[in-house]
Length: 261
Ligand code: COA
Image 1 (cartoon, rainbow, N blue to C red):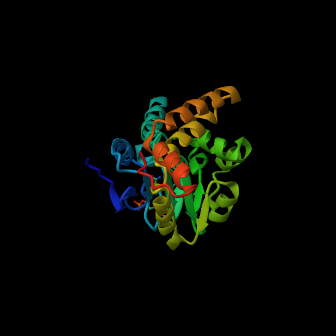
Image 2 (tube, rainbow, N blue to C red; image 1 turned 120 degrees about the vertical axis):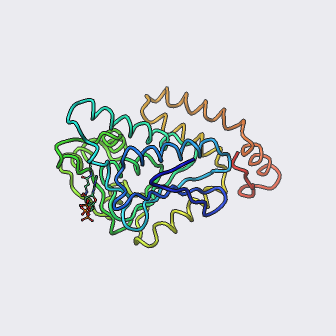
Image 3 (cartoon, rainbow, N blue to C red; image 1 turned 90 degrees about the horizontal axis):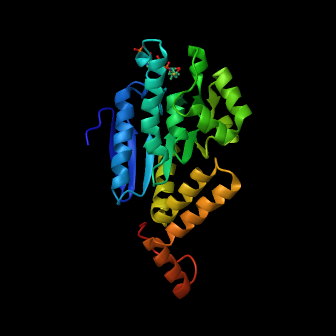
């Protein structure tokens, strides 16, 4: 795998970090989006990968889409850019692994869309997030309107998108966009610690829980419950369920050692 503007780090067995590295602000060019897509496609096929962290480094998570690529000003350009984001961020959102965005500095526009495609966002008190697209006379096109509205509700999403405000970390946490709020130098260690904890658990069951929650949230209740039944059925086919149920019956709760398969 050849990544041009990012790299993969393996701080611990089972945990992978996709470290964005496109100076100065990790603007999401076509090439960096291709990196994200390729990295997540590779993670998907590698059974040893249990939990994934996306990290932009200590300065900025990402300042969003590379505005240099926004020409010519015709509908086809918007469609192309949006589809590039879709291709990359769908691989993130659909990952079988739990995913954590570790956010220091700015996460704006497409950078925030990348973070929203992850399961969790750990953000710094000094972080600033937002959708500044309106200041360019455009709207988020990489999943921002759809994912933000589902996370915080339509009115709060419209307020953020209509105003383009830079939102401080504390407000992002109060809105539920950040799941954890910490000083900047504690963000990556906290993400790594949580990733390590999850990676030792029944990750195959987490995959089914994620499929049921993410797939079910847009469905009416009956269809969501049917999807849950199917995910519940699938989880019984995993080694983790065999290990976990056997351990419970023999030794009581909380003693199983899972393989994550
Ligand atoms: N696309 C392309 N280039 C970008 C960019 C983006 N989204 N965001 C920043 N840059 C470039 C700047 O043009 C500048 O280039 P230069 O050094 O060649 O002049 C460089 O990155 C540094 O940006 P600068 O604004 O000087 O840094 P800063 O630390 O003062 O501010 C930000 C950082 C992220 C607050 C600011 O760059 C910003 O608001 N960027 C735009 C965010 C945005 O609107 N994103 C949505 C796009 S749809």
